[in-house]
Length: 305
Image (tube, rainbow, N blue to C red; front, top):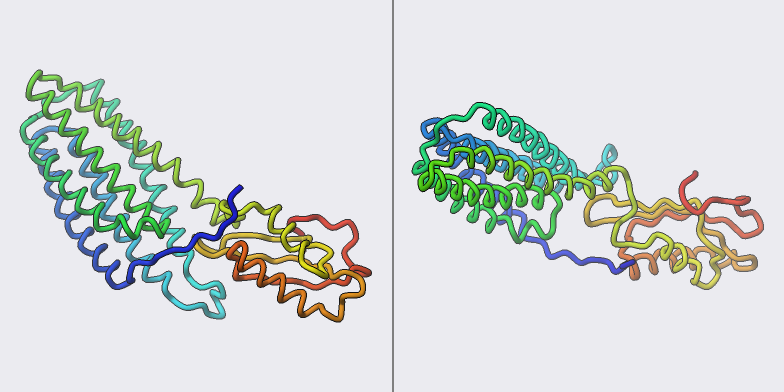
């Protein structure tokens, strides 16, 4: 299992904020155009795409606000800082995607049961404009998405919306050429299916962080084994290894100092902390020292107090 620490290359915060504001503006304008187009053309797929596009704009607003909150410094009330605001924002955005996906499934089924006429030419034109805007938004957020689960959630909103626009263009074209109005709710189902698949695939990692799970890029057993290899260490137990946020992990454990080495306890503790940072990238390490003669009886490796 991989255990190397990942180094992140951050986009300048101010430049990133400007990109998000630009992406929000174009998405809000597009949403209005798509809703009007969907109403006048009678296309459910276009309204579905507009609803999804509106969720893109909201997701970008949530992402932008979370980015600003996350930059606040640590305080007495929030000793780990506010970086998890971005994780919470990602959870909100993925949950919203799931709700939208389920709503679109319901609407598509109702349209299958009660078909309605669709003006294909208007669908194709507005969906083509939507695709261009989706691609612009994706380009604005792509570099930031590699470094943040928060921006990645917003970015995936837009990628799925771009695919939705392609599907709407195909549906409108088929309606123009063959009069197949049933393609409209079928495309809506496909868009909804993709949204749900994408959201469920990503939301697990976000929940894992919020549930204080261990970092997925680390093998927890290797962390204990690595510490035990340091001279004077008899082992670690009652360990807690968790992600503070997307980029930082923390370790808290009882460290047993080998008999006869208690005089070097401070040096041993410093060596363990340095090894944890160098090997695994764990900068937040809290160790409760125990001498081997008075160590916990039959301790568990993970959890406990």
